[in-house]
Image (cartoon, rainbow, N blue to C red; front, side, top):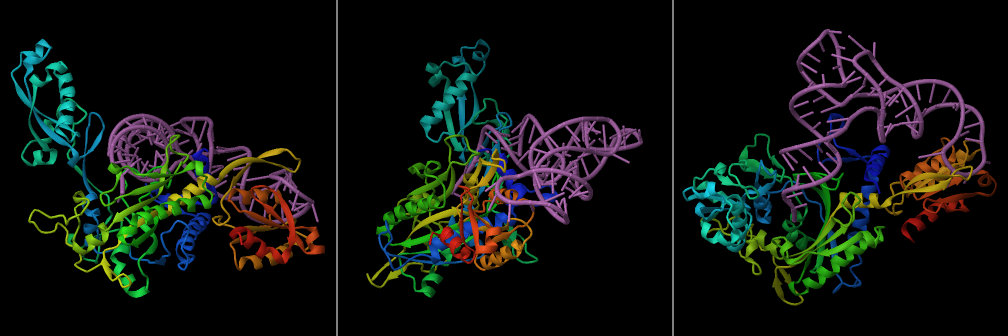
Length: 556
RNA sequence: GCGGGUGUAGCUCAAUGGUAGAGCGGCUGCCUUCCAAGCAGCAUGCGAGGGUUCGAUUCCCUUCACCCGCUCCA
């Protein structure tokens, strides 16, 4: 599928516009047009209905360890700055980056090791170099273990100074190894070091901060002390309201809290249409359970969420459930699976994340109680301490543990987090829906047709009501049907031009059904219903239209 | 953020240092009894800013956006 055609259709028919377009646009921000807003709302409402309001807490669902409660929440985008310090985002999102002007590569400043290398040129095979006196030079590398650092540097420096690999141990010596920021703090100029993929000094730029959280100011006179952040995820609002929900709603562990809302990340490279946007909408569940059942719940949610996308029309061959490897796991996670879709803009065989289902353990609740936990202290997780021996970021001090009055047990619940991107899901459904096929024209000749084969639950418009011609009372009969349908569904009335053109218009925006009033309607009260995908038509009584559409959309 | 490419109507594209055209789409009317029909008419644009020039959509600079690659991606 050609992505350009979909982007063009989205613009042309009012699904998606670039934000602030009349001013030239703004990178990483997108607006949903009249049809796009309906589509995205349908995605979010399907999710909310299927996960929250439609959840049957009285039954044990297939694959679930037990019955469970579900409830919702809608919290603010701006929260107390301490939330982000304890969540770990504050530390993680303040990355300093350096660029190499020679190789055009970019590095995390704090991930570079600086090795002071003693060079003895007399081991060189190059006569010019071998005459020089021994000297030291600072080389950098991303390798973290001494063996890897040695292998990297012996190779690179060996090449530069014409030293055979068997002589490298004599020619070079690692005099000192520091993290690059520490070396610079100790007084070495950045211009004196060799970049990780270069072999001459002086190609690294000064470190620049990439603040991946949007900063804002609370209060009209606010200064730096009043800095706050737009949330980079909705999840933290659920954690900080955990106790409120438990105390106010009669839910019992295991239970989930769902939230849909905007989040903001200053992505370095927004790209691929809406896939990586700086302002985006998440659909997140934090599911709280007893620690000893958490693995079962993790598997349940992983499979349940995967099935949800299948049920709404993403095909198994383009949708994959991928378990993360241990080294890929986030700092808090003891198990994560991504639900990924083969977006057409990705290279063949590559998938893009729609949703991450993470087992977060008790990292979040305990961090908000005790202070930010040290992600490197797995598996027991201890509070991360600052230079003064006190917690680096203080927690709330509130007790967020849960008392199970049946088992007479107190514990900090473990958390399973299915975190879905509403915009990414919407984009995936659009990509999957886009089809070009042929349909016969009035002379029976095949004509190219563009059709969005959206699941009827997701389609922005559920049905179009069309008088075959604009006379003989057909518009009046059609309008009556239109008004009846409108009480339940987003429907569209169109009496302009030839009916074939009107069918094609509806195909292009994914309307699953067209109801047509014709001459026969006026005599026997029946209308035709046309199916978008098969082009088949059948007749039903005009007054049965709402029931027919309801049945076909919801499968009732 | 770096390198390369691209910005002309709602969409797809053309032409030009001297006031921008087409097809499709849209709107209005006529016609039209089932899959983008026909006729008539209407509307809409040089991404933004600056410079060179008598005159810039065209040449130059800056900027913004998009695409490809790199980088990044909780």
